[in-house]
Amino acid sequence: MKKISLLITILFLFAINIIDVNAQENLTENKDITSLIEKKRTYNKNHGTGFRIQLYNGLERTAKSTRSRFQIEYPGVYTKLTYKAPEWKIQVGNYKTRLHADRALNKIREKFSGAIVVPM
Image (cartoon, rainbow, N blue to C red; front, side, top):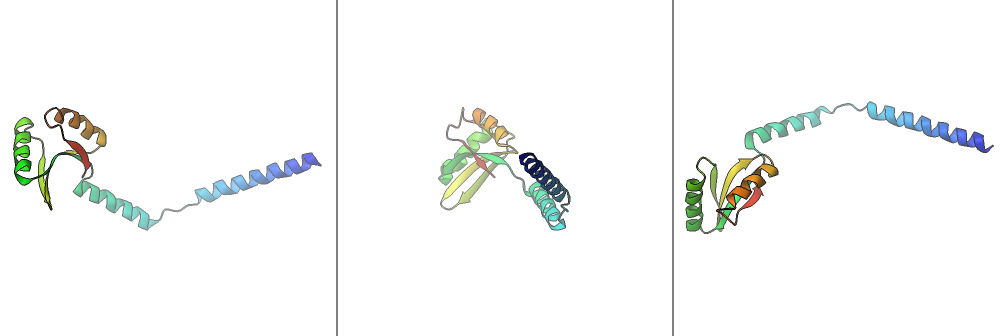
């Protein structure tokens, strides 16, 4: 009697497992989701995602002098001066990954000790 009930239980679990696997294979792709993913990829290509290194956050005069000093030390590196009340920010570089930004940060911190990595 125990062998029969054990056999029935095993067959029952096996049948449920087969049904479950077949149910997962019958998923259809939703066109709306595919469209949203494509729009997000296009947006990311146009607007960029990634990281920058922020050198300074504070007064305008200090921000501009920090930017000038950075441009002399590292010519050719993109710099961005922005104002968000009440502070000015100097952000440099365009890095796709945090790893690339951290590597550049190690070099920049030698001359700009307060630098940090920030997302774009």
